[in-house]
Image (cartoon, rainbow, N blue to C red; front, side, top):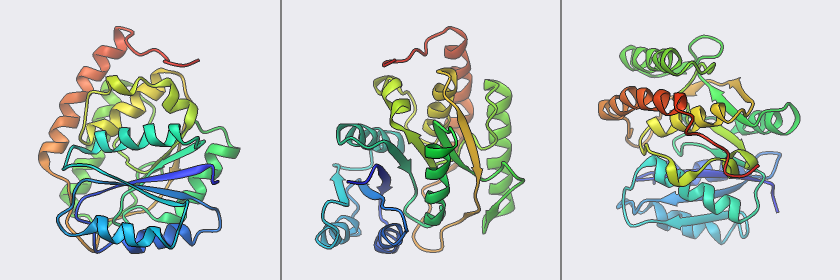
Length: 246
């Protein structure tokens, strides 16, 4: 069995899902994949189920009743990964905005270079974003700057969604107490890992906006993130974050 699981949440990703699965399985290291599927009306789940026959023991799907939020999808996946004994658990988008080849670099940093939480970072070496409108680039970049200012986290890309966790990080976080379900979820998980003393390393990546399918991003998602960090800072100051497991 592989020691690594890539969790990919999906909603209406029929244009991308087969290609992203095949690309991950073509890498020189063996990664398994768990699709968290939120009842896509476009048939995404059916495509995955057909592919499972060709990748027994490597491709899995968990189907939910509807769109329940990014955070709940990943938490569902984290619990599944821990239950099934994976040592390295990855978050990755289905739309090729994250280059699957970079999974190898994140894994190497976690396994061989001391990263407890490894982030595929768009901003650690400048701004490495392709095909985004300038307004969206600025909104994302300055949102990360705002998060650093409020939380004091030394993370350049605080909203990044391409990550690798060692299992001990997820075991130490009380997943029942995660508050945010949109993109603020990504900030909250990093903040808690940082407050619990885990080593966070950012690895530079190039983020390329999707060319197929429809983006799930909205101004409301960013609003949740901007307001949510104030609550995170308050909880951090009051000492509410403690390890569940030593």
